[in-house]
Length: 208
Ligand SMILES: C[S@@+](CC[C@H](N)C(=O)[O-])C[C@H]1O[C@@H](n2cnc3c(N)ncnc32)[C@H](O)[C@@H]1O
Image (cartoon, rainbow, N blue to C red; front, side, top):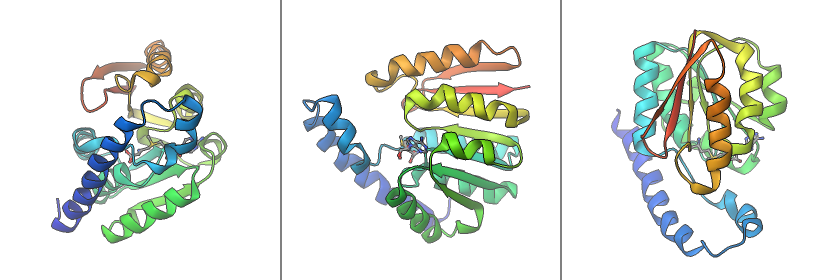
């Protein structure tokens, strides 16, 4: 990994560690208050999942990459760095305008701007409009939207496409939706799927 990209990851990691402490102090918030404040926080996939998805894309030579849930761009940089090596491109979707602008600046600073197509809006509206099929998908938006997004992405998967869904094990608050997603994707006859205890727990699925 280039030093300038490593430096950017370091900035994210410092922010993430500081926010983890703040989040610990907020456990007493009601779900409504937490929902109201959630956009303040990075809540990224973290280095283990980031480096794993980067390696998987490079090894599988994935070129057409879709990210659902950009947030502040941490995972986007892992994806874009892989896309640069495979000659591919990342399309990334985020509903929050401020977050996607922050992500765009970080991706530019990392020298990866040519490898990312940023789309701001509701993923459920954008996915049906996307042209082309995908070799790799990272699902990491709010967890109740995993199954609706999967339903929209499913007809757009290339043979051999890989789908990674984050937060299958942690946090506890996402467990119900995560299990619903896991059950849904494992019920599909043309998909094989496995849970990996990496980061917050990822479901890695392959369409054939
Ligand atoms: C867990 S964060 C993504 C973290 C990011 N993948 C990373 O690792 O840096 C989830 C993001 O999904 C976004 N999101 C939630 N609902 C969405 C929707 N309907 N369409 C697009 N983005 C959405 C949220 O605004 C939030 O920024």
